[in-house]
Amino acid sequence: MGLLSDPNRRKALTNLLTRLNTPICVVCYLAAIVWFMGLAFEPFTLRTYMSENAMGSTMVEERFSAGERALAAAKEFDAHKRKADGMPVEWLVKAMQARGLEVFTQSFSRKLPFPDENKERYMVRGTNVYGILRAPRAPRTEALVISAPCTPGSTNNQAVGILLGLAQYFRNQVYWAKDIIFLVNEHDLIGMQAWLEGYHHTNITGMEYSPLQGRAGSIQAALSLELSSDVITSLDLVLEGLNGQLPNLDLANLFYAFCQKLSVLCTIQGKLQRNDWDSAEGYTHAAQTMMLMVLKQASGRSWGDHGLFLRYHIEAASIRGINSFRHYKMDATTIGRLLEGMVRKLNNLLERLHQSYFFYLLPSLSRFVSIGYYMPAFGLLAVILLLRALDLWVHLGAPALSEADGVSEAEQPSSPGVLSVLTPVVISHLTGVALYLLPVYLQEIAVEHFPVSETEAVVLTALAIYTAGLALPHNTQRLLSGEGTEQGWKVLKLTSLLYLAVLLGCTALINFSLGFILAVTLVPITASITPHMLKSVSALAMMLLSPAFTIFYCVFIYQELMEAPVSLSEGFTIFLSVISQGILDHALYGSLVYPLLALFVYPCWLMFWNILFWK
Image (cartoon, rainbow, N blue to C red; front, side, top):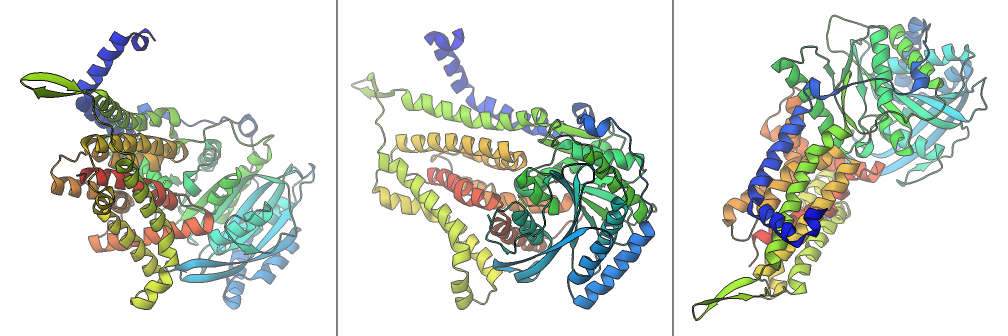
C-alpha cells in the first residue's frame, strides 16, 4: 500500500507503465494465448473425481436385462409413428399405462418469428407424453427425469424403446426415493421448452401450451437419451446448455465412471480419449476437444434437450449413441444398465448436486480445467484494455507544451465538448437497437420487394444494417459540426476501452468461452486504434476483426475441428444459417448471444470505428 500512497512512488509507477505500455500489452496478449493453449496439456489439468459422497459411497449392481423387449417396443413405436405420421400419442399413453405409470399428455403450439428452414417448420404443434413412477419409500417431494425426443423418420426409436423398457423394470423395484418421470417430447427443444414451462408454471417465451395435469416433486436431475442409429458403437456425452451453462461436473464424472465399469466406449465432443498425452498427437487431440467445447459453449445455444433444464437449476446432460463404424458394438441391454446405474446413484442424493465445479473445460472425460486455471488467460487480455486506458488517462491529464518567443510553456488541455463524445456513443447504440429489432419486423416488407424467403430476408436485413453502421463516422461528423478535437477522441477511446473491459468481463463470468473469443479478436485492434493510423489498412484490420467476421472464422474452425472442412461458399452458407439460428434461439428459448452482440458488442466496436475516422 505504501507504493500507492506515496505520491513520488505512485508517479514513478505510472511513468513506468506508460513508458512500457506497448511492450507490456504485447507480452500480455501472447501470454494469454500461450496460457490458454497450454490448458490442454495433461500435466496442467486435474484428474476428475467424484465430489458428492452420496454418489460415490455405495456400489450399484445393474440388473436390467430387457434389452430385447426394449428393441421390440422400439419397432412397435416406429410402426405406429409411421402410421400416425408423427407422435403416436394414443399408443404411447397405453404403453406407459401398461407399465404401471401415471400417464399424462400436454399439447402445445408455437408460431416462429420466421420459418426455420433448417427443419422446415413455421407453425409448430405437438404433444408431449410423460409418465410418472411414484416413489414408494419417500414423501414424493423430489423427482428425476429420463427423456427421449420423438424425432422425424426412424431415428431415436431405439431410445424410446429403452425408455419404456426402463419404466417397466423400474416399476418392479422398491428402492426408489424419488419420483421418476419418463418423458417423450415432440419437436425436440420446442416440446421440451413447453413441458418445462408448464411444469414450473412459467411462460417466458410466449409458448402456448395446456397446463400439466400431473406433477411430481422438485426435479433434481435429468438425462436425455438420443440414439442416431440402431447400431451403437459409442456413447457421447453432451453438456453444453443454453447461454453456455454447464451441469455440475459430478454428472459427467458419474457417466464416465459407469462407462468404465461397463467397458463402454465413451466420447466427449465425439472424440475418444487418448493416453499418449506426452506426444504431439496426444496434445493436439486434447486441444481440439477443448476447442470444440469452447466453440459450442460460446454459441450460447442448447446442444441437446438437457440444455433447457439448466435454466431451472436442474443438473442435466444428453447421452447420444453414435454409430462411428467401429468394430465395437453395444446392445440395448448395456445402454439400459448404464442408465439404470446413473439413475440409482442420483436416487441416493440427499441434496442437489453442488459440491463439484459448475465452471470448467474438458480436454477429455478423465481430465478437466477448473475456472481458477482458465480465467487468468482472460485476465491477461482484460489487463491490456486497462493499461491502454491508464495510458490515455495520464496523457489527458498531462499539460501540453507550446513555444512562445522561444520559451516553452505548459498549457492545460482543453476539455472536449460533451456533444463530441456523447453523439457517437448514442448513434452507435441506436444502430445496435436497429440491428436487434428491425430484421424480424421488416421481413414482410423485404419479401414483398425482393425475391427472397422470410428467413433470407431476416438474415440479409441484419447484414445490411450491420454494413450500414460503417457509415457512422460520416453521420457523426455532420452532427458534430466540426467540434471534434484531439482531446475528444482520447476521451471517447478511454470511455470505450473501459466499456469494453466491463462488457467482456461480465460476459466471461457468465460464458467464459464467448468472452474469451471476443477478447482475442477485439482487444488487439481496439487497444491500438487511433485517428492518426493509415486509414485503409486500419479499416481493413478492424473489419477483419469485427464481431461478424469472428463468427465467420468460428464456423470454419468448428468445421475443421469436426474433421468436416468446407469450401468458402459452403462456409458462408453455414454462416448465414448460424445468424438465423441465433435469432431464432433468442426468440424461442431466450438465448442471450444475439442481443449481447447486437446491443452491446457491435455498438462498442462502432465506437472504435468512429475513433479511426475522427476528424
